Length: 293
Image (cartoon, rainbow, N blue to C red; front, side):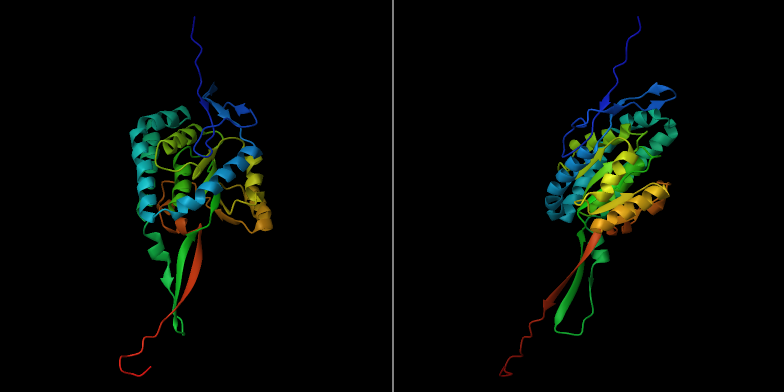
């Protein structure tokens, strides 16, 4: 008598924990006709719970030193390296070849290290001392936007998600990501990496499910400050931009599907989710000794 395989139930990741979706729904993606897992079908309530967790975590995360955030991102890369074989196997389960799977995992690790290196450098690049004609200094520096929603690329199970998350959290933001609907395994396993790393709960939240169902809630939610959209559906882009008008939400579209490209390795991805803060500081004039003033 043949044994019945016990499929793993891949739960969502909110606030550092792994709850099942409050809706109780799930779906079963297939590869070559074979079911590859039981995946939570997230709901609007899950999005709202994730936003609450992200908002709570964002302030303390932004207040950490840039050097400490760099250490945390590097630790994520270390754990990814240690679980490399599992990610390769899951990518192959979802239809990738072994060569492509190994390349994707290696690039995901390297990309996290790349942005770890930028955590304590981007502010020096993008900040400035501005020329003024008065007796004061004028400084501009970068501050995180806040809570960022991520619509991950639907054709990349791991590298696309890592490439979107890394620059956002490197800049002191927190995020809520919708994983690729039909390639969800690595996204949830990546959440397990985050849970066992130094990333505070709530800084990264990962949901699985129907992108078309969840996307409108990202555009209309008042406490999501920006959205990174990594797909190419023009109707969805228009919908997001229309919904964002109500609370002036920033919509950033990165539809380049080649995540192996250097286009996904530059500090401008961090800058896209930063606000410029300008500070004026008076200059105290110190009179020369013996001047009588």
